[in-house]
Amino acid sequence: MKEKERKGFRLRAIFLTLLMAILMMAIGMIAVFIMSGKSPEKLAMTFLGKDEQQVLEPENPTRESAKVNQQLKDAKEEIASLEKMLDSKEQELIKSERTITQLESRIDELTTTAGQKAEGEAAATFEEMAPKRAALLLEKMAEDDAAEVLSALTIKTRAAIMDKMDPALAAVLIKKI
Image (cartoon, rainbow, N blue to C red; front, side, top):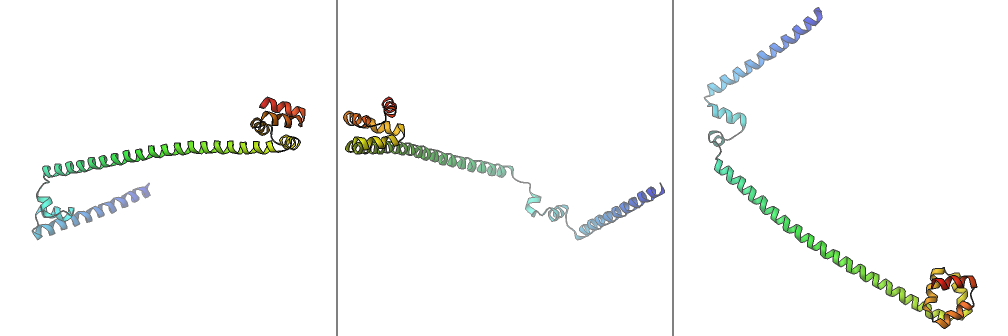
């Protein structure tokens, strides 16, 4: 118990000593400033870091209002400029999307044309082949591909080739044509 009292007493003594030192320094500083002849306004300038005119003259509310109005005007102009830029970018995006759509349709068209051309060339090749050899090749192809080739041939050539095919496969291909 006595140790706690001693410890509490020591803390109080240290606190009071520091408090006295701070008070003495403050009184000393006040005395120095009074002796130097500086006015309270000049003391405030020293501590606040403001120049003499800012301390002695309060700010002009009209001038402050004009600053705020100018900032508001500048902000509105910037917003208008950014909105114009946004509209421009949106128009560019729409134009690019149209171009992409046109190019995609052109690609589809060319792919279809190329497929038809290849199919026509394949059909012409099978037209020129012997029916037995054409039947052997078609039997090795996928059923859908073989049916597609057969549908592009003339009826006479198709009949000659199917006559040389396996009857079960010929029946399946006839259904797919």
